[in-house]
Amino acid sequence: MTKRQIVKLEMFRRVRDYGTKHQAHFPQGSSGAQAFSVIANVLDGMSAGHKAKLAAAQEGFRTKKVVRVELRQQLEHIEMAARTIARTRPGYDDGFRLPERLNDQVLQSAAKLFLDKSAPLAAELTAFGLPDNFIERLQTTLQRFEAAIAACEDGNRESASAQAAIEADIAAGMEAITRLEIIIANTFRDDVSARAQWTRDRQQRAAYRQRPQDTTNHTQPTTTSGPTVAPTSTPTAKGEPPAVTAAVAGAFESALRGDSQLAPSDEEAA
Image (tube, rainbow, N blue to C red; front, side, top):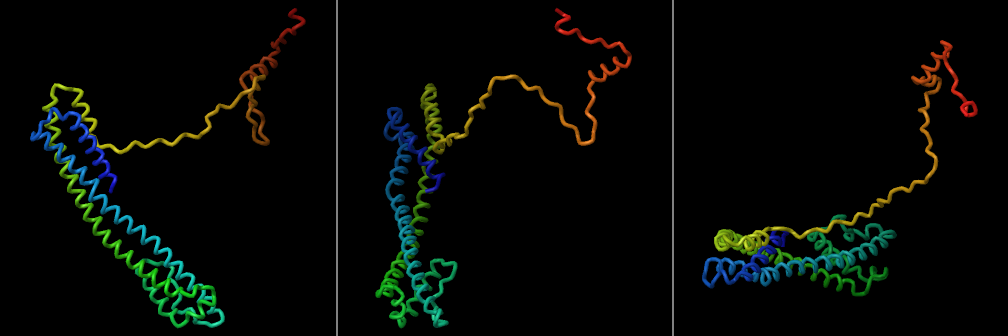
C-alpha cells in the first residue's frame, strides 16, 4: 500500500468514527447514513481481501530472495572446486563460470548448465569437498527457485489486481466524503463544535514525525576572573614603522613647541 493510500484510509477511519459518534443525526436510509455506510464498507474491504493479496505477494518475494541466495551459494561452491581442478587441467572450468551480474533468468540458465557439466564429473568435484549429493541438492534448489519465480509472477498479478481494487474503493470513499461535506454543513449549521470536529477528522494528514534529539553540547565556556588584558596593537609588516596615533602626534608637537608639562607625581600631589 502506498503512503497516499494509507493517509486516505486513516482519514476514512476518523470519518467513520465521526459518523458513529453522531449517529443520532443520521437516521437509517438517510443520505448521511448511506454515505457513512460507504466509508465503512471501504474500510471493511481493505482489512480483508486486498490486504491478503498484498501480503501473499510480499511473501512470495521474500521466499524467492532466500532461495536465490541459497542457489547462488551452491553454484559458487561448484565453481571454486572446478577452478581448483583447472589449475592443473586447463579448461576444466569451462562451463563452471558465473557471470558478474546475475538476474533471475541468468541464474536459472547457469544452474542448468552447471547441472549438465557436473553430471559426468561428480566424482572429481566431490573430491574437493562438495557433498556427495550436491547434484541432487542443486536440482532441488533450482526447482524451488523456479517455483518461487512463478509465485512472484502470480503475486504481481494479484498485487496489481488488489491495487486497482483499492483505488476503486478509495475513489468511492472520496465521493462519499464529498457528499458528506454538504450534509454535515447543513445538519450542523448551528453547531460550531460539530463542524470543527468534522473539519479536523476530514483532513488528510500523515503521521507526525518525531524530531531527532539535538545532541549538540550548548554549554557556555566558563570564564575565570582576573585582570583584563588590554588588546595589543596589530603587528606591522617587517620593515614598516609603527603607526602613529593622534595622541602621540599631539604630544610630539607640544614637545617641539616647548610647552609640554609633566604631570605631577603622586608624592607631589600629596
